Length: 146
Ligand SMILES: [Zn+2]
Image 1: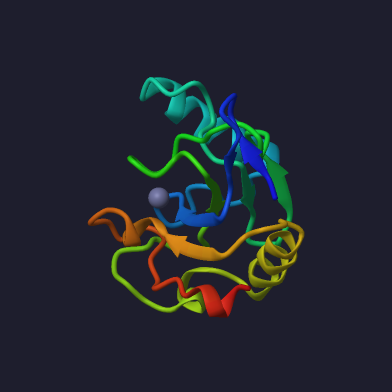
Image 2: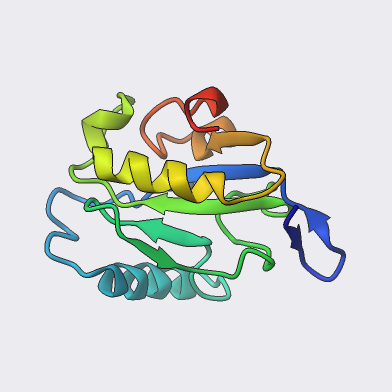
């Protein structure tokens, strides 16, 4: 089990996100450039920097964000006891679709492997399960990921 914050809240859920970017906006970005860009957005929104616990590029590469033991800033009202993972979409998400409409098989593999490393995880949800948003652009079902 992973525990977060001084009060050691158990982490039982991962929440998936997309970047809400335009077509080509992050094209040719390295993972570090994606991290720096999102970090800047989150600073501008008054967060304590990059609010997710890591990101997955379209080629499946991973870049870490907040330590898993640090409470994130990614899903209002549900940041405590959850991990936030950012999937960088390959095309603009303007409607609900399927995972493969916006993301790659490499991302599916990398995310599945990352989730399997997390002891005690019981649920994988989408931002849209917690707020009236498109993010991450598809219906997230725990059984597809755990
Ligand atoms: Zn989101």
